[in-house]
Length: 98
Image (cartoon, rainbow, N blue to C red):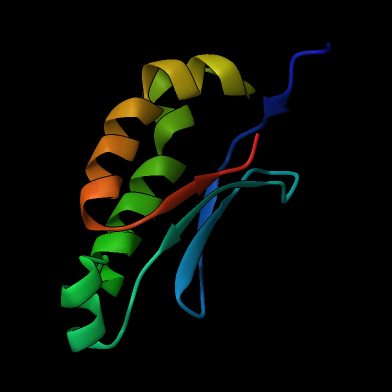
């Protein structure tokens, strides 16, 4: 199976109830969901819009932080994502498309 590449720059774009992180080819890399309604958000322990934005923006910075052109998906998920996913599962949802 050929190795997938996700060329920088990555961007974080706001959508209704989630942010989507895309690579330079517009391929979706990650989805970070949030809830606007405070009662529903606290009951389900979901992210606020600002928390989701900060996570999405930090995911979008990964190629720059790693200093790699054309970041491979598998090392990124193994080395970086477990910490992000652990954080997100306590407060909300992150969906990775690989």
